[in-house]
Amino acid sequence: MRFAKLLPPFALVGALAFVPTATSQLAAADTDTYKELETFMSVFQRARSSYVDKVDDHVLIKGAIDGMLAALDPHSAYAEGADFQQTKATTDGNYGGLGITVSSEDGAVKIVTPTQDTPAWRAGLKSGDYITHLDGELLYGSTLDEAVEKMRGAPGTKIKLTIVRPGRDKPFDVQLTREKIELKPVKWEVKDGIGYININSFSAQTGAATESALMSIDKATGGRPLGYVVDLRSNPGGLLDQAVSVSDAFLDRGEIVSERGREKTDIDRFYAHPGDLAHGLPVVVLIDAGTASAAEIVAGALQDQRRALVLGERSFGKGSVQTVMPMSAASVLRLTTARYYTPSGRSVQAGGIDPDIVVPQLSDPDYKLRPRLREADLRKHLLSQTKVDDSILEDDANPDPRFTATADQLKAQGVKDFQLDYALKTLKRLAAKAPAAPKVATR
View 1 (cartoon, rainbow, N blue to C red):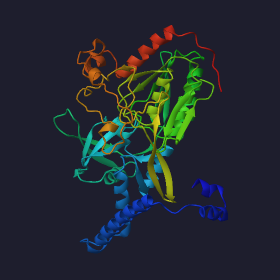
View 2 (view 1 turned 90 degrees about the vertical axis):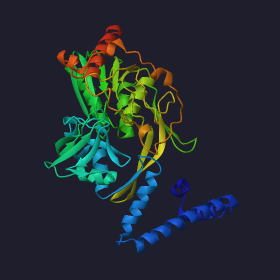
View 3 (view 1 turned 45 degrees about the vertical axis):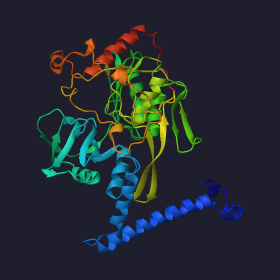
């Protein structure tokens, strides 16, 4: 492919004259491939000619493609038609629906994470919930695409979801109204002199919105914020370049992330540019089991560069990169082409980012009973290329005296979000020890 781009057609033909004939080993491999393709064509022809109902060729081919990619990993997929439009709209940060990321588990639909400020999030749906029925119709046995298609619809229309939540005795119904989801990927506010930046997705505008939030916080605090809390909880990820851009906003130098493909030499590295928009002030990053992909890149980069203290729970563990390849004007192939690594060389695939300080979400009354869905729970997930045994650490059953309060006790104290409250108090302690912040600088 590289030569084809560099040489004119006649030069390429001339070059091919010097290519030796295939070795017997390559010929044998080709023969095996042809045998597999013959088997596929035989099954295709039988299904086409003998199935009980007449089947459209496109349905058979599309099903074969879907099955082929599903055999690789949970994130490679082929999208066309409505699925293609949804993929494009999601990366643009503007799409219709309920605002949930879902996966398939043993024929059931499982919620990976709800997106903030969407119907699903406002209704209190949580990671690990199972959706068993839509408008009373059983979903078990349906494909994930079929389930997603049923949840889509015109804004303003209603749909009833039946939810099974581990730890609850009975299923319960949730009535949702579909909306046009126009994500604001970044929200900010000042809490007790601390800049709070909530990044809920990595769409095409996230990097610029993060820089804008930092400048707005500077303006609101007269250029003297105590520090920053970056909230990446329940962030399902998104675009790699936006993760690099967000990380760059808090770093002055050094590597942010590297992606490595099939070959040992296939490595791309991304570095920070001079100019820390956070002025070297203390930073606390919040993560949980819903923090995935691009969000993990940011958390891992700031943690490895010792630029931030990471608090919360171990992240999702999606350490793979999907390349979106246009196949036609209305279809794309999303194929896993690389793993990504943090600056210290860690692969978070199936392992996730471990926080510097583990802080449970005590304000969630279900947090002890609700299972955490992570990459390692998905079928056909890529294996991690690092092996770390934390069984001894995880076996410590001694209660932590810092985390004994119940949700009701915290509510009585006015604490609605324990992890955020803990992060703010931690940052105040860090700010007290930090040197005075410089005046606002731009780059």
